[in-house]
Image (cartoon, rainbow, N blue to C red; front, side):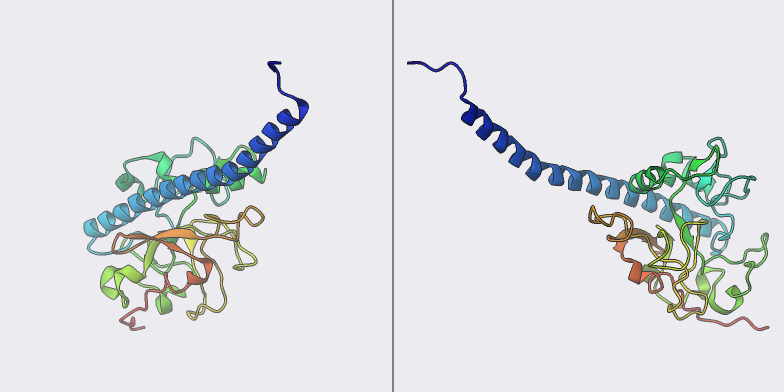
Length: 253
């Protein structure tokens, strides 16, 4: 007798096999998608690093002023990365980035902050990166860093750098705040420590790439571009190590 239909048992077996395959393939697909997003993010940072170095070449080795390197203006109602959609960046690095808007946003970061459902009215996240706040607290046209600690710990130009450029990041991904650091993403200026020792954790590197599903904001790594132009993975515990410039000269007061 020829059978022209599956029995119920056979259908259940097929369904079970399909379920197993899905359970195996979905995590792999998720990982592949996340790695593609991480690569896109690193490409963005590479572009930022090149723009940073070009600015320095055009400005006698001075770092771009860390207060207005991306946005020179802040409109009422904007906060941190949440900007009005028609507010195009107008800071010092923007001309060097080729006016490429997509370079400002990490895809993984965008998904995390938009899923939270919080943003000031009429705004959306328009950037996801921060600049090393120990660099560029002064330039001839902009004045000093507003909080004064720059005179003690920060540096203004490349000649004051006391560590190898490959050890000091210029642009990076800033973390969401507690428990890794005191503050979260409230601006695009990154300062790991006020006291110059790294033990007070003001800001911390991001941790949302390669993060587990149950800890998507704090369980992974991020990336940073360094003053020699290379991009590498970093963890939140690296925040002070890879931003501290170790000033090689002291200003005379």
